[in-house]
Length: 126
Image (tube, rainbow, N blue to C red; front, top):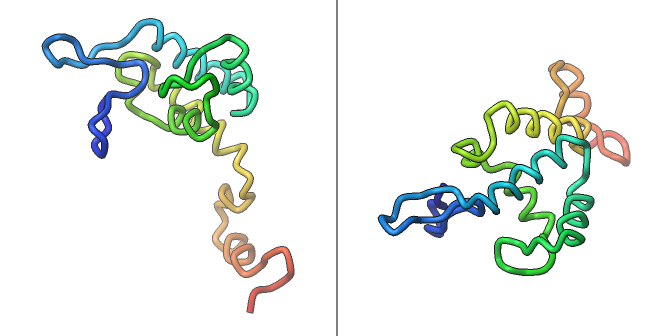
């Protein structure tokens, strides 16, 4: 729930008076909504627009969520500790992987992978 680098608690969580981490119900609902919107096939831009129209401030208090913040939120496994379930997290990861713009990412065949590694938009690499 806490960043190892910055020592901040993730959006959707806070510390209680005893310094224990607990969920913030209103923010937890936003996190759940973001995951649900992603699973419904919405792009980061559409999720960003939805949150702006709903008047939901970003974790830093800005009026607009950045795509980077949304992407990091969707990649954060810590949300499986009390806000979303593991299956939802895995489903989002699978969906994001399938939408990856790098067509080589999902290549399983070694020969096909090696062929793609040696090619780029301009032909074979020297």
